[in-house]
Amino acid sequence: MKKQYLLTPGPTPIPPEVALKEALPILHHRTSEFAAVYKDVAEGLKYVFQTKNEVYMVAGSGTAAMEMAVVNALSPQDEIIVASCGNFGDRWAKIAQSYGVKVISASVAWGNAVKPAEIEKALKENPNVKAVYTTFTETSTGVVNDIKAIGEIVVKTNAVLVVDAVSGLGGQEFRTDDWKVDIAVSGSQKGLMLAPGLSFITLSDKAWKAVENSKIPKFYFDIKKYKKSYATSETPFTPPVTLIVALQESIKLIKERGLENLWNDYKLLAKAARAGMKALGLELFGETPCEVVTSAKVPEEIGGKIVKTLREKYGVSIAGGQGDLKGKIIRFAHMGYIGKADLLVGFACLEMVLTELGVKIEKGKGVAAAEEALLNG
Image (cartoon, rainbow, N blue to C red; front, side, top):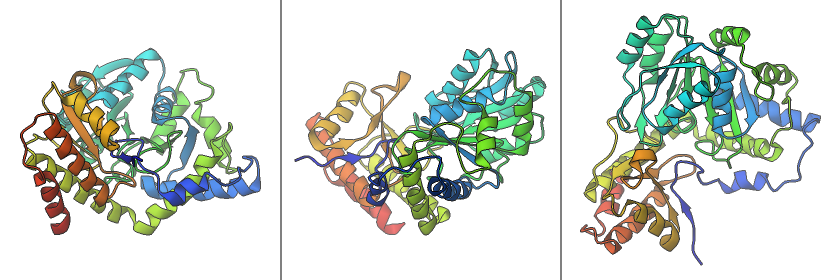
C-alpha cells in the first residue's frame, strides 16, 4: 500500500476535519441554514484577505475569478498594463486579449520579479491605462512580487490595481487594503486547504467605479449579481454547497492559528526547503523566492523523470516546470496543510530518486539541512 504525499502548489492536502465536513448531508442553498454558513464564511474571508470589503464566492477555479476581474472592470479597446513574471501572470494578458482589451506589457523574464519602476514608467507613458494586472506569488517560477510597492505607485493614478493572489493568499503576508490593492482574486485549493472548485474576488470602492463603466458583456460572471445576492447571504447561482461548508471549517483553523503565525510557519518551511535544495547541490530558481513554493534547477535530461518517479514509486507529488521551464526545474510547495514532516519526507524521497537517476549526491544531506533550518527557526 502506497501512502500519498502532496507537495504540489495546488491542490494541497486537506485537513481531515475539513474533509469530513464534505461528508455531511448536503444543505439546500436557499435556506436559512445555508445562509448562516455563507454569512460566517463571508466574514471570515475578509480576515483572510485582510480587507473591510465584501468578498464574493464563485463556483470555478481561480481562473474564474481572474476572468471576473477582467470582464467587470474593463470595456473592449481599453488599455491595461500586464506585469507578468510567469505563466499565471501571462494568463492576465490572454484573458484580456480575448475580450478585445489592449495589453501593454511591463513583464519580465520568468524567474525575475516584476519591477515596480517599470510599472510606474508604463503608467506615465500611457495615461489612459484603466488597470494594472499582476501576480502576487507566481508559482510557475517560485517568485514573489512586491505588491506593496506596486500599490503605492498605482494608487496615485486613475488605474485600478488587480492582483492574482490565488497561490499566495493565506501562505504569505498579503494585505489587500493596506497595500492599496483594488481587486484581489484567489482560489480554494491552495492556502485555504480545500478541493478545487471555489474562487474568490474582492473589490475596492475605486474598483466599483470601474465596474459601473464596464461595457464587456457578461452574465454568469456579472459581479453586480453577486453583490446583490450577498446582501441576503446568498449567491446568484447554485454554489458548491459542500465546499462552502468545508471552507467554514478551514477558516476556523486559520483563525485559530492566526494569519501572522501562519505566515511565519510557511516562512520557516520555505527556509528549510531552500536549505535542503542547496545542500543537494541544486541551484535555486528565481531572484526573489516566495514562501509558498521553492523552485530549483535540475538537469534537463532527468527533470521530468524526477517528478514522475517521485509520484509513481514513492507516492510523493511535486511539480515540474511549465512552458519553457518544463524539465528544467522542480517545485516543492509548502502551503496550506503541508507541514514539517511532509517536507522532510519529500526531501528523503528526492534524495533516493536523484541517486537512482545517477545524480551524485551525499544521501541524507538535504534532509539534514532542512532539519537544521527547522530546528533553528
